[in-house]
Length: 277
Ligand SMILES: NCc1[nH]cc(CCC(=O)O)c1CC(=O)O
Image (cartoon, rainbow, N blue to C red; front, side, top):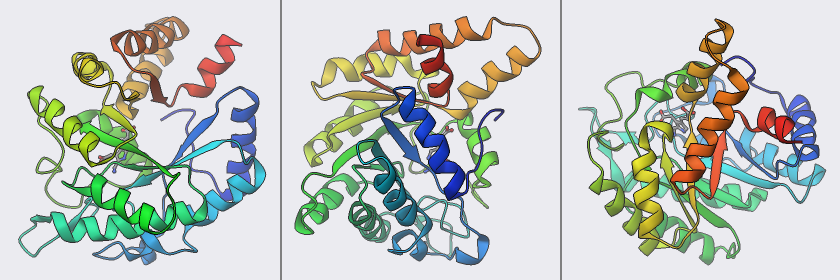
């Protein structure tokens, strides 16, 4: 992903200060931890002194107003690379996973995250996380729910960048079937009933119809994730001189907005902020 980097904390703080200067007021963190800290159940994910928790604290100390969004999913922390716990046959264990996700979300809120964003797609996790956050006193911590997240080839460059591809199988038992539109509405309705503050559709560009339908189904803010593969395709074609990169970026993001997204999570954020200045 040209232009995207893994940052150490010192350089990340510099990067975030630049983003803030450009008018970007929210950032989402995705960690890469060493293999030695990974295990089958992702225990490092709720270490109060873990990489994400320390990073959130440092960012909020530096720029207290910037909205810090943390990812809630086990894939960066498990040896097998799945978003959930797996049994010996490779089956994902939904409810035991939710127990770990809850601890992870509470530890992120304790570190100062403004918004926790479950990207794992387990069933029932939004309700469980909301209940645990409230019980721990984090009533103002919001939940950005990855509600309609499809099992997509567009995540390829992200998994390469983070070295996070699953070691066996695929994510099709918890992420959604690209051919299914109505299930997105069902997932969105469940997440809203469980207490989501924002619902997200992911990926964005091949799923504009889903963004549009979700927009019509709720008055909550709708977010869309312009994912790594969408970014990589534009960068690759631009490097070959085949497209007008700036115009393609603006047109793509405009189409996501037109479809009904109130917020767009995108790797183009800094470039676009510069263009629009
Ligand atoms: N919890 C995993 C996660 N969080 C964000 C992305 C993908 C983001 C992107 O492609 O930009 C993924 C990948 C996956 O589901 O394997």
